[in-house]
Amino acid sequence: MSLPCYITHYYEADKGPFLNICDQEAPEIARIHEQESKATTAFNRFALGDDFMKWRRAADDMLVRAYTEKFGFPPQHRPYYAVLGSFDRTLTMFRAGRKVELDLEDFQEHELTFMYPDHAHLTRHYGLDVPHLFCCTPTYPGSSAGSKPGLRKQFAPPPTPAPQPAANPA
View 1: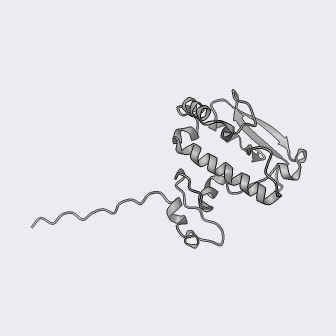
View 2: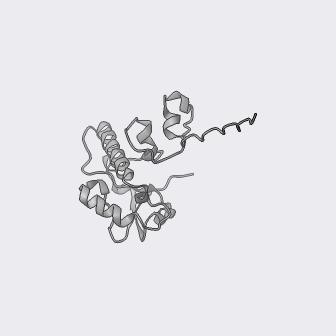
View 3: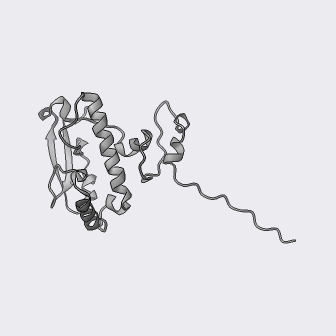
C-alpha cells in the first residue's frame, strides 16, 4: 500500500477555502453560529451549541503550541484542515461543500503537519479544560484508559443509573 501524494481541503462554497473560524471575533462567531446551527448536514458541529467554539479554540491553540514546540517558531496563521488523499463523505458536513486538492510536493516541511488521531480527542488526552463533546473511550495500542488517571471517565458517556430493587410490600 502506498500513501496518497496529495491532501484535500474541504470547505463551504459560499465562504471559500482556507479559513479558520477561530480567526474571527466573538460577534462574527456568534453570527456564524446562529446562521449555521440549523443547517441540515451529516454532522453539524454548530448544533453542538456554544461549547463547540470553546472546544475548537482550545484545540486550535493546542495545535499552535505543538507546532511551535516542533519547529521552534509559531505558525504564520491558525491551522487549515485537510485529509491525506481524499474522503469525499466530508462534503456532507457542509451545506454546499467544495474541495481543493493540493500536491504534497508543493509544501515546505514546516507548512504541513499531520495528526493521528484527529485532535478532537487529543484535547482531553492533554488535559485541556474543554467541554465534553465526544463520548467515546479511546484505546491506544499498548495502553489502557486506566494508564491515564481519569481518561476513561473523561471520554466515557455518563453512567446509566443502576436499577433500584422494587419495594417489598409487607
